[in-house]
Length: 199
Image (cartoon, rainbow, N blue to C red; front, side):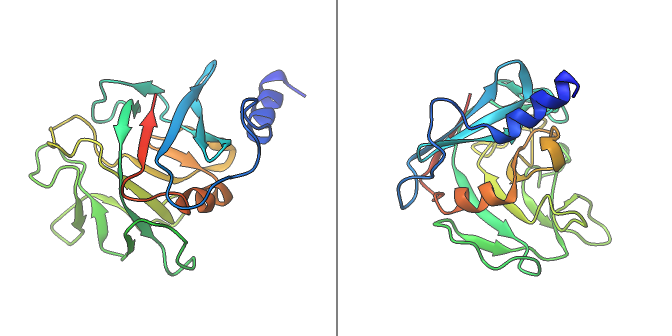
């Protein structure tokens, strides 16, 4: 087996050596940490409740000074705003966050010139944006983060979410992505006061 393929498989199946394999605790977690994986800028570990699970990061890794389109996951401490969820595909998950069903017209403004930049919008015939209802399953669950919201600054990044991962934990455009089973467990520990620290 080629070394790179074997390394990728090990990354997906082996738990972080410093943590157990069980999600511990109940209620909303106070802090969840996301760290990059050594030697793999677009891979990381999400650490919560005594367990670390592998996640995909932006193709450019983690950066403190994020800009629109740079492919980086922003460094910093953030709060989850709400969960967007595909009710036509999944039952409502257990979580402490506000939950909103995704509708076909839901989108996200990524245009730095728009006054709606980095905000949810309703997609119509005259508006454009990143459609949140996708044919694939990446956005079946979207944890909206408060990145670049206080204040919103043009070109400093938009639509930074935690969402479902592609096969093989392929890099994202800047979001954090994880498999569905881990997402369900994470949602059960997320609340509005949870700090999500990306470093």
